[in-house]
Image (cartoon, rainbow over all chains, first blue to last red; front, top):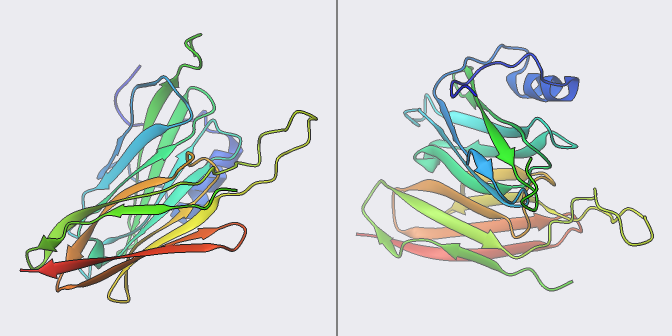
Length: 131
Length: 108
């Protein structure tokens, strides 16, 4: 398993469409976004995830939206965070549901029109029977 | 359904323009709409679909939630505090209910 974020070709059409919807057709650059999730989640019902984007968060240059997608869930959408310069830093944490072992993707958009992304594979063990 | 109870954790005071961390949690089952009951009928979706945080009436952070968010949705984010004031937190349920909570902060 590679630790490097990558653009997977294995994404389903629904996931690609969801990324496109956020990116507005632009190809997201794999940079500046740090998605933190456990490598192995024992309980797919509550998987903690943190997304942090490297941004000055000033009135002229800040992160506007970050969308979290789960590539292997029945519906890829998880959450969309909307930041403002008042947020101070573009960082948020929540807990999500994962149906099975899959990639979690974060797509971030800045006020200057840049689109960044990161992805992470989370292994889900259900009931200790193995993923 | 049990009434949803929102909880927030905001520091009581901060320095001017300090970036603080805010933690929020609301008790809610977040029924995803994917599950079926014993008779095999789908259980209708009922989730908190929107969360917003404002400071003195100005937007700070908001979030659109999907059914993939866990029960009792937890959110942690940051805010810059330019002056003393009040944070207002709002959660919107699929059934139209709105839950809200306020939290004061003092700038030293």
